[in-house]
Image 1 (tube, helix red, strand yellow):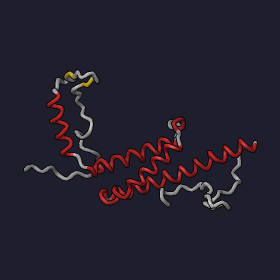
Image 2: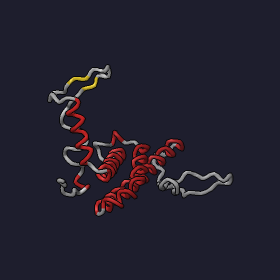
Image 3: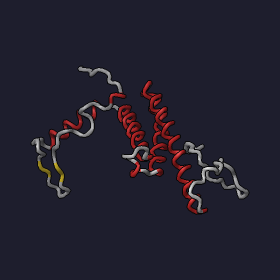
Image 4: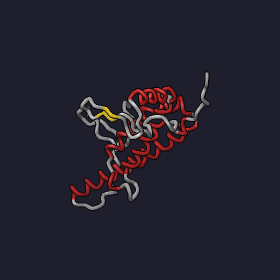
Length: 176
């Protein structure tokens, strides 16, 4: 039996994992499939896909998904001039929540790379809180007619008289 050498998940998926560079059968949705530009038949494509599925590990996919979410989260924060127009704090928070959900799996399988991802997650969270706070202060300033209302204290998570909780500006993991 030929065993392939153990791969480091941080190197990403194998070059031939996931989407193939070969375009094969093209399904038009009308039940008609034709060979792709490389002339690969549907059967050949299925065999190639099965071989790729044998080689890729779930750990690789979890690690790559987490790295992708970190990158997308930073992009959605719009910290650079190039990405400022793409700022979407709701999407950034969703990325943070998803990364948090995957971190236990990453820590158990990625070893040293897990610490780098934890550090990146911390930076993502800190930047999210800062931007969300700035956005909230701008909204308050617009309502009160003030242009910069940075003297307002940040509110912590408290319970009001009715037992409902007030919105906290501090990001916390779900279920806390």
